[in-house]
Length: 196
Image (cartoon, rainbow, N blue to C red):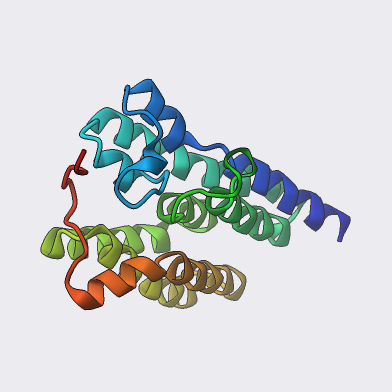
């Protein structure tokens, strides 16, 4: 239990690093929490028009999720899963930004790739197809969140499939406002710049 608690804390602190907020400032866009959806995720950073900042956010947000899992794995698969979920929660509720973070999609992707990359690659392909057809990032994330536990159940193991299911539930919770806008047909398209 001590190792699991430490893994959760480690994952949370790593996940709390607010890369979107950092790259937003470095790109001269100011506080990205004051534009668009108010999230520190890559989709909202993209709304500033700074493509390099959005790309860097995706890479680093995914990287912190993967790093949490890979570094904790030396203490066992359970510690790796707990650290991954901790990183996801850290991204959603970063202690450095008064617990106001992002939606967690890129961080979850990094976690899943570190769990078992073939199943995660299928989930990523699902995101690409849905995003390409709809041009709506949140819809792609929600469909992928539904598909990922199935991929992991079919091609990985029960522990990782259960973790993917937990992440899917948390992604749906973090996308409550997006779901409401989707139902109203008001969700913005990928790349749409935020209004000043």
